[in-house]
Image (cartoon, rainbow, N blue to C red; front, side):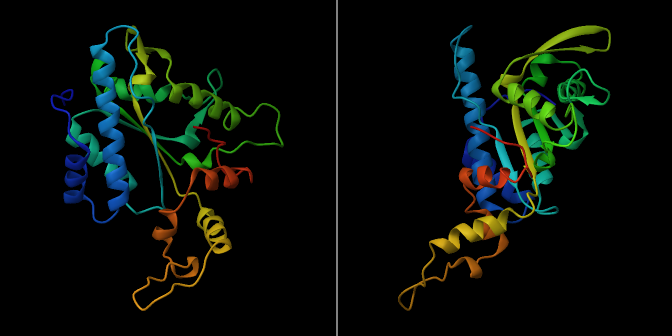
Length: 245
């Protein structure tokens, strides 16, 4: 495994993913663009030296039921780029300082995958699965595995220094240099999207018109129409993390 020697374009990334994963064309295109912008922004930031800025966070949220290939997309992407990938289940995390797996543990996994090379680890990808399972519990005192994890993740997604011990030494990693790919099934989200689409739907006109009424759309086609507002509305039920951009 070596650090990225050549910056792959978004089209090259999508084409490579096409060779290994069937379907999911829209996900491949958006994932390819996000990865390209992430590493392009890193190079731009590094060229400016200390105090330089990149293009902002390019983290992605992949939504889809189990078995559609979300994990395979990320594994294939990591192999193409030659960067370490840390796979973490969001449900296993707890707020730092409590018994369990702290949110910073994903960086220790990245460092282990990179053989202790901090520079390579900072080229890595954090794959955070079951992102939709991060719930805020309202019937307990200190919510260390729900709201506590949410708050910890938000600072990491925004970017901050992370100090951790690796074997016999202390290292510091910059989370702003790492790409986060979050995934989840978000069960029930399609019903909410269909309801929104139904409210503004109308019958198609003409012989060549394509029927795109919500009732005729597949689950995949409905997920393609998810908006940030749908996620915010869905989150008010308390079913997923309250996410802000």
